[in-house]
Length: 227
Image (cartoon, rainbow, N blue to C red):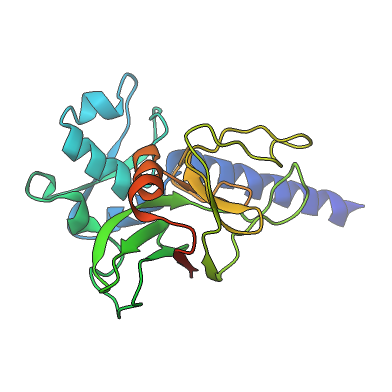
């Protein structure tokens, strides 16, 4: 009995630490704080993306770097490039600017880097953006939700009013704008990015990225590589 209580206390303490860590460093870019070339700031009461970075392009860079489009909250750590005034969003791409030609358009999604890259038929990067993919465990369905790795092909697209047939459980209906299905029920679509993998397996993107891919890049048959 004593060992059981001790284990429960240890589990509870670990969970509390994880929650505290997640709320304070709840974004992909927090590991950049110890690296040269970045400055990290702690969000204060009243701060927002717009008040901290009024310039749209600079704000866009910082949001992409942090893999986050949700509102800021006090205590959140945000990484900022030291040379923010001299760069554009392609300069901070975590994916290579060129790959071996696939002889066709391809989308590469790197789960470890929380990012996608759109490459033309010659292998040149023409756009990239953050992603939030499947999380390790989904309490509502009581099983892991990781996005499957491998090569697939887009077989169906939807518009700004695309809806999930599955989530929320049990009847579906969640809005997944500009959905692009690439494997069974898995899709790329616009959604909320908290700076971590947080979906049921779909690949969430910034709204403008999903819209651009859907309208101007992706066709049925477009290759999708997830690694």
